[in-house]
Structures are given as C-alpha cells and as structure tokens.
Amino acid sequence: EREREQVFRISELGDSVLNMSVSFTLLVLYSALHGWLGATARADSLAGSCGNPAGAAGEVAVNSEGQLVLADCHNTTTLGGLLDQLEQLKSTVQQQQQVLQHQEQLQQLQQHQQQLLQPHDCSAVRGSDLPNHITLNAASTAAVYCDMEHDGGGWTLIAVSSDDGQDTWTWSNRLLWSTDTSTFGSLNHLQHDFKSAALHSVLFRDVLFVHSPSGVWASYHNVSNGTLTFGDFVAGVSEQCYASSDSGFPLTAGNFTPTALTCGDTSLYFNAKDRDGQTCNQIHQLVGGNDFYGPGWNSVGNNMCPFDDVGVFGSLGPCSIGITEGNGEYCAGPFSSVPAVGFGRALGLNTAAPASGGNNMRVFVR
Image (tube, rainbow, N blue to C red; front, side, top):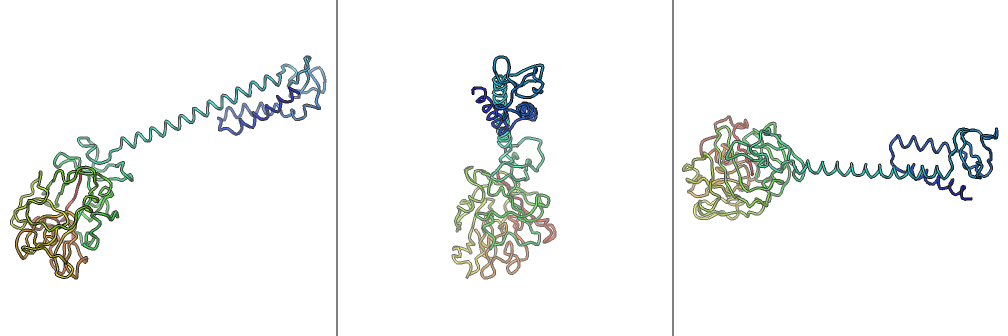
C-alpha cells in the first residue's frame, strides 16, 4: 500500500512539474522519468524480476525485500528513490522559476533606469555633444529640437510661428497656445508652422525667441516658477489691458534692440488687449480691437503707445480683428498684408519673401 501511494505521489509530482515553466533540459529529464513509469498504473497486476523472463526492462517488479521496483535487469530503482529524484527535480524547477522571475524584475528595473536617465528636457543635456534632435522622457516619449547656442543653451523648442502661407496660429485657434494639446508640423521643416508636445509636457522657467532670417533673439528668465508647462502658464493668464511697459517680463539677454514701433520696449507680454490710446476695447468682436493671444510684444499702430494694435504688430499669430477675426494669422488680409512674426515687423526684420516660410519665430523653453 505504501508503494502504491508513492506511485500516486510520483504521478502528482509529474503533473506539478509539467505545469511549471521549465527549461528544455528539465523537460527532457522529466519525460524520461515519466516514460519509465509508464507501467505503474498496472502495478497491482504486475509481478516479475530480472530472474523472471516475464520481467522485461522498464517494468514494475518485486525485489527480494518485497519492494516495487523498476527493473532494467542490471539496476533497480525503488519507487521511494524515484520519488526523491522527482522531489529534487521539482525543487530545481522552482529555483529556476525564481531565477527567471528575478531576471525579469531586473530587466524591468533596467528599463525603468534607462527611462529615468532619458532627459526630461534639453536643459538636462546642456553642455553635451548630443545632436539637436533628442528623445525626451516626458508624459509621452517625443522627439524634440534643442538649442544649445543661445544664452547658455539647454532650450527645448515648443513652437514655430511662420509666415508660410498657412493660417495655423489664428484667433479661432488661439487655444493652441494653452489648453488645446494638438500638435502639428515637423522637426524636419522648422521654417513652417510647428507645435511640439513639449509645449504641454516640459516644465519651464525661461523663454527664448529666435527670429529668422535675421538671427535676432531674446530670452526672458523666470517667466514661470518651474512647476508649469508653457500651455498651463498661458491658460492661467487672463486677457490683459496693459497700461505701461513695466508690467511685462523684462528682457534678460539677446540682441533685440527696441525701436519707436515697439514703444521703446523689449519686454514680453501675454494675452494683451489692444489699448487704442487710453482705454482697451472691451468687446473686440464689435469694435475691431486687435488683441493678441499667447506671447507677444508692445507696439504702436495708427494710434499711440503703448499697446496699440498689438495683434497686428507684435503677435505670434492669434489676432482679433472684429467681425473678420479668426480668418488669418497676425490679422493679415483685411487689416494688414504684412505679417508681424513677433517683433519681426516692428524691427524691419522680415526680409524673406512673403508666405515662403523664411520669416519665422522659434519659441523655446528651459
């Protein structure tokens, strides 16, 4: 009876081993042992030994001590010994499973470490010899363009506003600068309108603007506190009726030189209303106020400084123009045929052919 229980235990162990994820070598070993036990289900009806012609190799026999054995006419193995072997095999398989689990955990940790080592913005690779195109580990992995030349480098490109004949940065699309997370354009064609996912994923303090084809640039430090993305920051700024040039973010570095058309001002502003002299138009849809949305600069149009027709002369695209608002960038068309491209028009920098993409402004954060 004890030997019969051992046979059943061997069968149970066999099923247990087969249910494990084992290596090919262990499977082969178990298969050999299991095949060796092929006749155990008939153990109660078999009797024989090497001395008995009926006892062929691999069959169950009874030895001189009355134990059921597997006979090969040269060696005999008691079922108890075979049971011990299978127990050892099971233990080995379990150990191997643990090793495989540890290897998988290690691989996951290594992948996580690689993600952590991946830069979260271009400032993380400042001073390196990496190419301008790198992959960020942000909310979603994305390729970005880095500027390592201006004001210490480490700048992540978030947008390009271009006079490329496409009306992308319009008043009706103004939330592209804030809550609309849509992206467009290509890193391979940065002379055209472009928006990176980094505008909504990279936390920033400083902002950099680089104009083409002039190369005039301007950087502004401590615009934010490093806890917001550019989109979140713009979304948090209500429409502003700026009264003076000291209410913006002062220029930190660059070769942006003010002129009378910028009201002698180089500061950066956000979501500015058209002042039209001493008051701002409160209902631009009815009276035609030329407001801008997103980043922009002080300017003077047909009235007086400060902040007159800022959407026409100082915006990066979104400009309100009364009943025709939303139809074009920079209020071009019904109001003006010359795009602003930020401070480009006011400084006379837009020297490339109109609608060619040659006149553009790149926006970076750090």
